[in-house]
Amino acid sequence: IMAGAFAQGAKAIGAIDATVNLTLQILPDNLLLAGIFIAACFVSVSVGTSVGTIVALTPVAVGLAQKTGIDVAFMTAIVVGGSFFGDNLSFISDTTIVATQTQGVRMSDKFKANIYIAAPAAIIALIIYIILGRNVEVPSQMPLLEWYKVIPYVAVLVLALAGVNVLGVLAIGILLAGGIGMCCGSFNAMEWMNAMGEGILGMSELIIVTLLAGGMLALIRHNGGIDYLIRLLTRRISGVRGAKFTIALLVVLADLCTANNTIALITVGPMARDIADRYGVDHRVSASLLDTFSCFAQGLIPYGAQLLMAAGLAGISSISIIGYLYYPFVMGLFAIG
Image 1 (cartoon, helix red, strand yellow):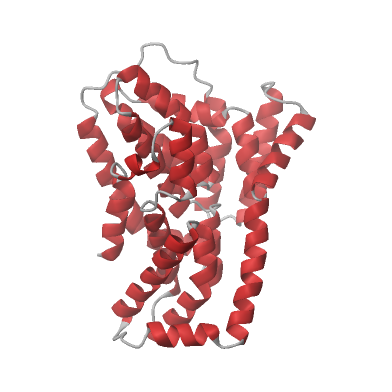
Image 2 (cartoon, helix red, strand yellow):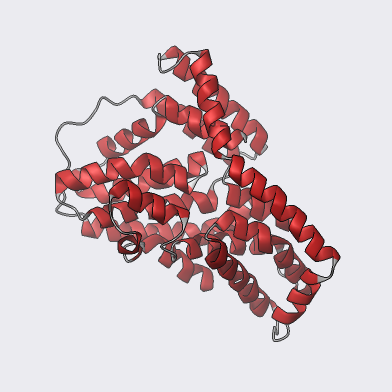
């Protein structure tokens, strides 16, 4: 609920556009592709939602593609790939929250385990974009940079990395967004409340599904269903590596069936924890595996919310985006390794 309120409040003050403008004005023309990827990574880490990042940045990316002659599907894929980076790492991402809660670990511990997979993958993707963007030229006229609108995102990221409780982080971020918005005239107090209400409403479906899924899983566990599935899936496991592979396979299959990485994590999280307990897998590692492979699987399916939203905003086929999703595929390779 608080993540939704913060994301929409920050968006209402123009923080997303400010972040994009800051990135583009700092980087030279030949780093435009890399700049879009960095902006998507930064925004997604700050707002904690891949779909929100895609909604915010895809129109900007499409506009730049049209002005520079870059393939629209390619530019859209850059945004989608960067959005998965934050969905996987952000302290306020619903997938991070579910992965850590189901495995009983702190978000900072899961972040430390995850960063060794996500960071190298992001660096490789960034190098690819630098190489492919050598001849790109950025439009000469760029909007005025309003750097102060980036403050809520920076504050959320710094406070989260410092180990502040996620509720405190979000509360401070919400207050900063509201204060800056009212000071710079982006909205008044009532409009700020409306913006937060829209953000909360956008989370309502996820909240309801989470409650229903939690009740369903409790009934399945009570009747022995979880134990049966674990016995079925772990019959051939012969060590920690096999247990890790089973956890990854579980979440990938769940994601392919549900087309929602958060729901997939809610579904298999308890089973993954039981497998981790039985075979000595560190819970920080199991949380990292769950989150990483759920984001990887989400990049494979053209019927997932992220690709459908991006394709709709760009006016292209969701299938045309998949071939350009360098970051999720590289991330999957690092996770497998």
